Image (cartoon, rainbow, N blue to C red; front, side, top):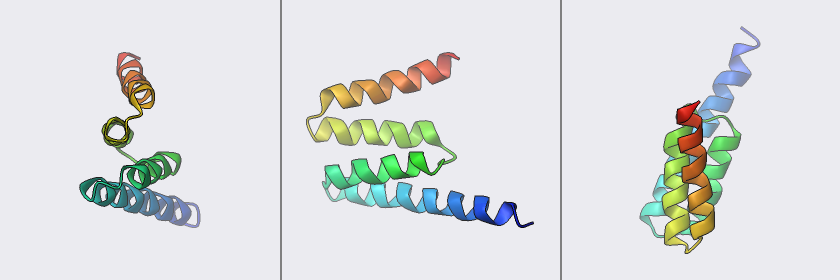
Length: 81
C-alpha cells in the first residue's frame, strides 16, 4: 500500500495539470497551457497522447509551428510502434 499512494498522488497531480492546461487554453493563455500540458506529461498523465495533442494545438495558437509538428510527429510515431 505504501508504494501505491505516491503513484496515486502523482496521477492526481498529472490530471490536475492537464485540467489546468485545458483551462489556460480556453482562456487563450497559450504559454501557460503549454507549460501545464508539459507538466502533466512529465508527471505521467494516463492519456499522454491527448495531452500531447492539446499541447500541440496550444503551440499552434502560440505560433510555435515547429513545436506543434514535433508533438504531432511524436504521437504518430508512438501509435505506429
